[in-house]
Image (cartoon, rainbow, N blue to C red; front, top):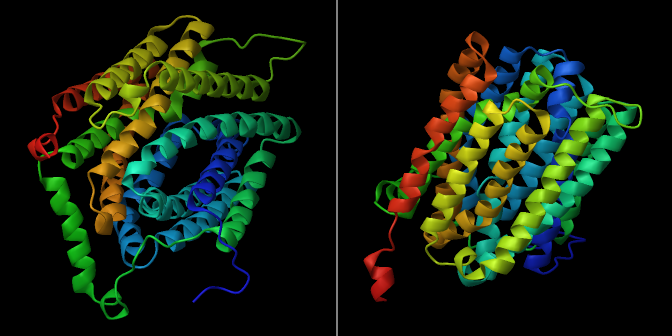
Length: 415
């Protein structure tokens, strides 16, 4: 039964509105979040790592239950719940700048994110079909980068008033997004489980085991789980400590009479978003066949090696701008790879367990970050951040081999 006042729009338009707004609010919330945690909340490097570990542990614990909800009840409902819960978590972080409230915020945010993870991609794939989803993912990635630029500029402007303000504004934005999508987001391609099956643990178990079965079989899904695990193990130290690395190792320049970190970190994020957007546009213009290939193993392996090289260069650089260029190259490679990887995985997952299987991939990444984050954080404390970064690059590199070894299934080649 339709809700009173609902006026659904086209699925592709709803997807772009939802994901575009998400990108805007995400960049608004997180452009200066690490700076906020260091300068306003006063978190130490160890606390910074622990905050990230708590968030990833939450994602690990809730990925499968929320993925099953999306597969049994509604992908649309799962996405809407995620928007509201993420908004609440971000508000908690922005309102109370101290360690324990920020830890609580990560738990709430992590639960909300797991409702989104896998559900939105599964929803739009069902709505438009697997053949039409690759161009839509690519279009979204470019939109994401463009709106990230807008969100970054807004974060910088709000941050000049108060470092809490952009975070609070983003939290409110997510709540408004959830309310708006409640009205306009359609769902016609998904068929929920019959009511008599929804409340049975046996059906939940069957859905979960079907997703796990896909992960056990040789092929794309199992390989992506391995890649996600390696990515998670290596990524936490870079994502959580790159800001500390810049503040610790380099002197921020003075331009127009200011060396305010809020101004400079906004500028760094803005430049990075523009570079990633240009890289994505050029890649799609110069190599459309590789970007849209049904089996893009070589491309993804190469892009991952670029990321490894970027991490190494960032760790070893003795000057600010070369270090930042290395970081932007790494982030651009990730931006190009994301839609290609997402479309490839979605093409190899059955519709009725798509959200659960995609959640397994996110869970593997979360496990990696929980396992890899604290040891690498401790290594950074005992030695230095560059040493931890070099180790993380070495841990990520084997994922390129996993990509390169993937081959099309014989059935796909013959049929």
